[in-house]
Length: 196
Image 1 (cartoon, helix red, strand yellow):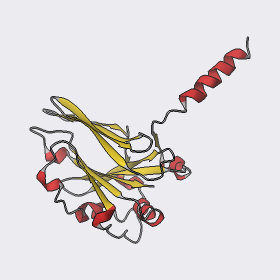
Image 2 (spheres, rainbow, N blue to C red; image 1 turned 90 degrees about the vertical axis):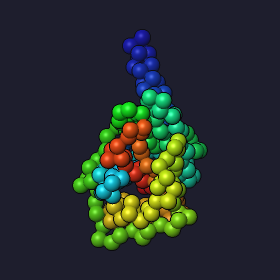
Image 3 (cartoon, helix red, strand yellow; image 1 turned 45 degrees about the vertical axis):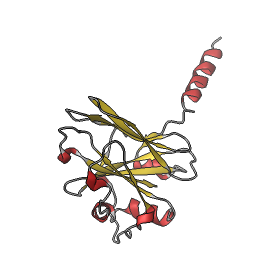
Image 4 (tube, helix red, strand yellow; image 1 turned 180 degrees about the vertical axis):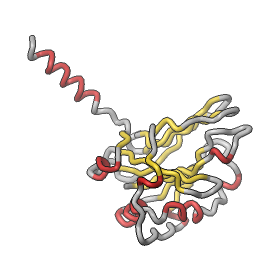
């Protein structure tokens, strides 16, 4: 009987680790991950890089992201999932008369946690950028000059490595609007997702 209880506990632990949900990781662990994405946050008004986080992914062949949008009658949300494995890469609340919060990743590293390169990653061409829209986006999103967003992150080592290692992959850019209706654009951020 004593041998059965540890075996059951071990089986339960293994079963809990087989979910297809994404896993937020730290910088050292994700280095060894066979497949990962990096999310970078850029302030809408100042185009300042604010931080980011690494997310492990299953073995998706390509990082195709699909938005799952819940319209905020009062409270809604936006979630980005991978097309092939339905893995969450980003999720945040959207409030009509308030401010939603990012729920995944749960934490972001600060801008100073990211290594800076001596050279800048070249600006991707228009065909290499995937602007993710959802709901009623502000008019400027469709006409956005993404060069200012790219300028905020093009000197990061992780961006340079991503573009060198995955030149055929899209750069995904989404405007996260946690407050709408009487929303305050000072609370909005660009979310940039790259294959790591």
